[in-house]
Image (cartoon, rainbow, N blue to C red; front, side, top):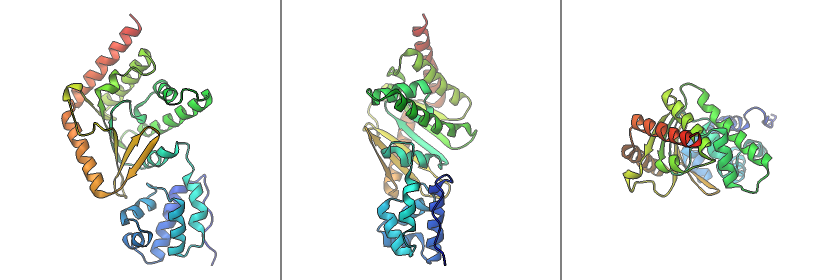
Length: 279
């Protein structure tokens, strides 16, 4: 019997590879937990591979071929599934968010990518890479705007963002850019497309002072937590860790201003930027 064919990279290769994994696992008569034991990972991790919320890395692909008797199918195709327009440390998170049903984020210093305008994204990317060619910056901006098109869907995914007040006050790209960016966020909130809260300076010390946090929920896969630093990112699926991070977010939301008061602050700061730009 002929083995599986190579995947077509133009047809969502990661999703197709996940579907092939599910088929091969079930054909072998293994549960997700049983396959996980043989791969030295959790059953929930196997579920995330099948749901395409996690990538099949080369070392996992090799073990899958050995355990499931698929020749070198997964090794041959994991490269196509790993191709991404995003930086390596963020690619897995960007691809997972496209499959999520709900996202909760705490942003300590800058607007989350899904809420950015092109001008704001351009200023952020230029600050990150001050010597990069203009073409590189524009490619990154285009990628960020492509991600933001997730919000074109009127109902999903749910996006709930808690913004530190520093996000509003740190002038990024100039006053006109800040005014436009905050007006954009306010517009999304007024259309009830996103939930936005501001964590004011007056809240003092809080549970996420060490940095950025994102939680992602999925329809048919366990939730994930994502942490990010300068040029680094880490996905976490350990249930205890994800549960703890969910508590962290809930405490942040409890310390933040209400959505109504947050919207009022965002619009007031946007007006300040606009008026100072145009006396």
